[in-house]
Length: 344
Ligand SMILES: [Zn+2]
Ligand SMILES: [Zn+2]
Image (tube, rainbow, N blue to C red):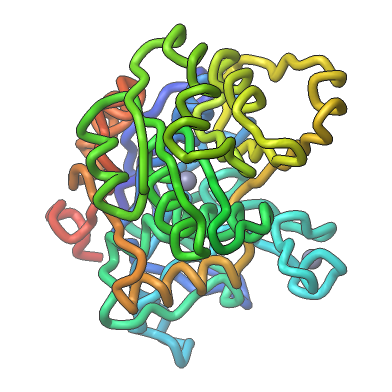
């Protein structure tokens, strides 16, 4: 089968490899769609360790179960990519990703979905309603799930003023999920088209900031546009300037929720936090329940999935380049039923 692998020197290589063997308790999934995430950039930059190489990347996966032995063979699924135990204190409290007996994550430390087939533990197969497409499900499997998790973690409630910094794949989902939770959402985008998209999907206010210095006035701008400072600042960008501005924006007792990051450190004096009892929360991926919620919302037409570009595996490097250059409106996805290589 064809696959995109991360190799030793941090490069992405398109390669031919055997269809993987399937251990007991797992199923083979024929990948139909795989989302291209900012996390891919982190792997290529060396910020994340794939725990072995070559590693097939791709952790936003939807497809069909291909397993003659399994009752679920042929069924449409989204892949929950956190391989947790399902029974520890974290798994029992909707914090699957913190599982103490985790076997890693598909597309991170186990081979992922930028390939025609991927091995998935049966517990990680999430049934997909016919009303949710493979490409939408792939995006829900990361950014949708992440947004549901972060909004739940932050305890966003009815009428709460909230800011979402960054209108990428996750940011667009955050805008929608926070609005569904009842928040009044302000979106900060780096271009007008992204802001328009956020406004069309539930943001009540927003602004475009296209250079680092622009963030200096964000605290006043958010306060003015929301009528009060936000209780929650969802950070999906993670540069020095944006993180500093985020803390500067918050209402007393507010929460800074770190989701996206770069190589730049968070640099803030504790006094600046203590003075107003600000909180720092961090949110990574989500639980299986968060993913199921995202899929349900999408199947009810309450959560929209915006696909920027559809490509095949050969187009993956360009899809990653456009993401690095911030040229993506929504999410890029790799589709596998158009490649002509998926006959096996
Ligand atoms: Zn992702
Ligand atoms: Zn566990």
